[in-house]
Image 1 (tube, one colour):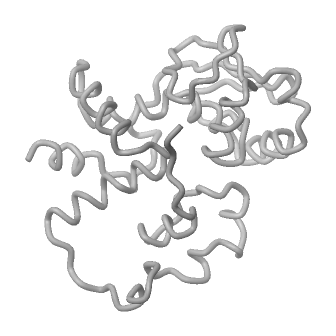
Image 2: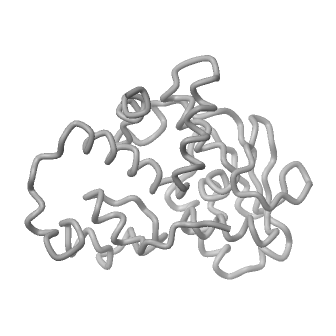
Amino acid sequence: MARNLDPKCRQCRREGEKLFLKGEKCFTDKCAIERRSYAPGQHGQKSGARLSDYGVHLRAKQKIRRVYGVLEGQFRKTFFEAERKKGQTGENLLQLLESRLDSVAYRMGFGASRAESRQVVRHNGVLVNGKRVNIPSYQVKPGDVVQLTDRARGSLRVKAALEAAESRGFPEWLAVDVKEGKGTFKALPQRSELPSTLNEGLVIELYSK
């Protein structure tokens, strides 16, 4: 299965901000952004050149792709699906990305990062409405109950991730029972509940050209 093998910390440095791709490390002073807040590469510290309009739009798209850990083909497919739905395309896009099973599992604390949550899903560690689902891109619907299998819940890494997520608090659109390792996807998140640093409007403009 295709996946992005670029080092996580380089991706954050390229965007110039924390994308929280490395789990708990992102909340410590070991985070690469804390030590080197410039772009990676030989000329990273000198990269102060103004981006073209296309460059600005491309960076906005790349940031969203990296945050949610999706490849270009997956992202494009999700965008066109968002475009077909009723409502605002930008909000639809983010809602579809947040509704992915790997993203829901991450928000519920089943993994310290989206990549770790994706691994839990792929390794048959997650049930949706009582049925095993191992497809990270599976679209979770409002009212669906997502839970860990007994085996996954016994993992020390999963336990640590659940405890860390509980200490930071869960999003309003989820109801999570940490002890049971399960949660309910109550509703699609509203745009105001999602990161303001994501600029989906620029992505729409990019694909409209």
